[in-house]
Length: 274
Image 1: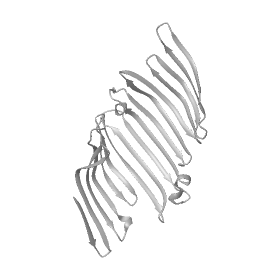
Image 2: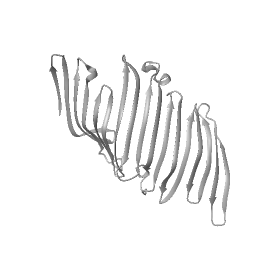
Image 3: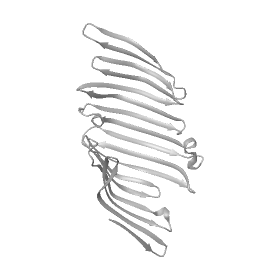
Image 4: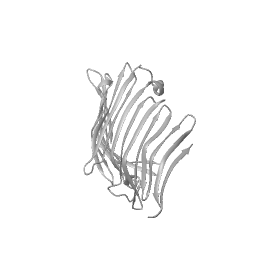
């Protein structure tokens, strides 16, 4: 159901809209998603800045069965001249149920973009799984969007706590989770990226694979440090290295410890040049 009406008042003309549909299918190749929406909008043509959209319900579900954990997302909130506010976000799949809230705010001056900020929080109702996202984008010199790559500055922090590995690989237990902190800042042309993967676990045929890592991208050079992996009787520790994205030259250092039997143990430093 879609209804659009034009209203005349002493101030001028406004346009009101109502959008209501359920399980509307949309195909992307072999993937089919269904959408349900209950939205209303008010747009005064004489004062565009006071327009708003009321999102009572907007939900999306994967209906083709190509994604085995069957994800779905529903949200409610409002959009106005200052941004998007999501009062309620619910993500659900066969692995877990998350709920939270968020907002995306923006600022313009004389039709020039000044800044934008994003905040998002999702937590599980039954486990320690959670996600926190905080990001900002600024245009301090009031440049046009054509200067986005060089003159717009961004900063973001992402915290992932106990992401279930069952979303990326079948036959995982509740202990198979991944936690990480990500920081990104700078410009699109020259970003600084920092990744800290906390002690995490993934299982292969019932055998746990433990890992943690530290990595960063700074001035076009990728660095790896404080990383290790452990699988059965095999351990690779003290993993470090660097790789230049400009000339594709780098190196990796590590130490391997393993045992072939109760009588034979191996300790071997590793150095690879790329």
